[in-house]
Image (cartoon, rainbow, N blue to C red; front, side, top):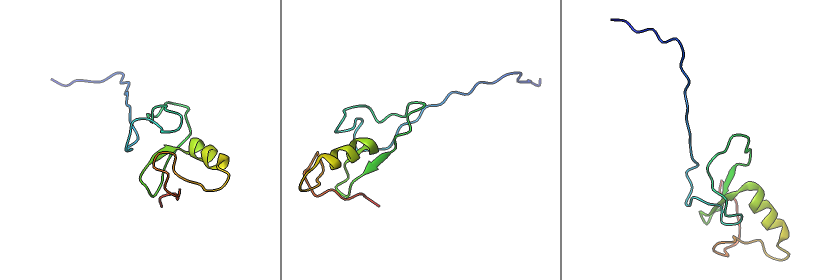
Length: 78
């Protein structure tokens, strides 16, 4: 018996592979939401944040730019 598929609707979800489920700055989930174009960035200290969150955090720092979680000097992981 052969089966012929007339219609198929695929549904998928995915998550960022990060150290945590939420951004340490805004506390929002890292899960990808359609229309959310903000990528994740990691520091050399292995902490992960939304790009717009860490850029805003770093811009607000007057003297030393550091990770908001561990206070190490912030350097983007390559």
